[in-house]
Image (cartoon, rainbow, N blue to C red; front, side, top):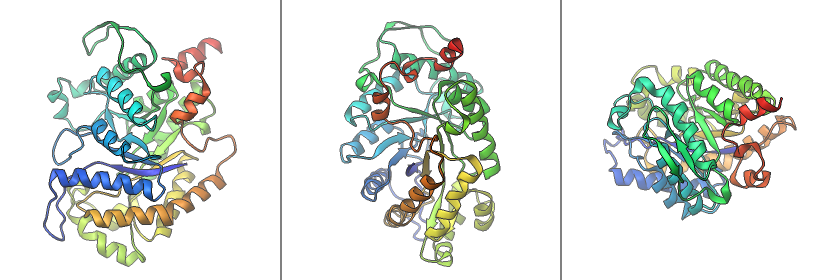
Length: 375
């Protein structure tokens, strides 16, 4: 089980002091959080990709390369990489380059992006979001798996005899997750290729999350990648912890009540009841998180959002320390104890994919089609 953090990189005023960090301070804070994640034994740090205020992470590969140079073990990922508005050639080359720099400690999560104005800034139409995600990702797979690519599609200029460079490390592309909240087509896409499916459920109830994950699991089995319970699933989560529930609520409430991300809508109590947000003790976070597996089945990656809503960096680092020392060791033990032997504990990594060898279906552009041809 991989456990880690994901950051959306919002620049939000601290409501208790009235101070808003500069963009430089926020970028530095994200770096310190990633380094703290490795220090306390977490497995993954993932950064969002945004091109509009109040968010700062517009250049994930630059930031992840900086973090890679200061870490040794941490897996570096995204949450998410915009497959709709970013040229797949750019993604293929940027992340292969990062893969070399990080010695393989890289995977990435594809997403369509839900900020409407971003699409025209990059010459795209949000009404074509799903077709863009489908076509661009298929081209990306070809660029990473075929030495020379001839391509003609609907959304970009044709390619003739094109080779993306550098080639993936060890001729093994990064493992890909497909992030989706409600688009069944994206769950289908993840299942077709045998990739991972990440449901960022931080604003959704567990019943909806389970419905999406179960759809992906059924289609994963349909396409011949294994049984439904062997599908590669990741979930989001949010937490704020203290020694007592009352202390956690007292400390976090002004951040919840004032953060734009929560929309000044439901109360903190209503929000925690309806979504994965847990404001309480480490034991409450453990109990809530273990409950996710009761709803969606045994899964392989759990990422927590902890640096948002204007929380000061020192408070976030304390939260990460608590997560790494008091929560994650128990979650690892309990998740493994309940997991059947045939269900993978971890998602694929660069090392495990290299070990499978060049003949594995991972190296096929369309593995589901190949499975159908041989069945």
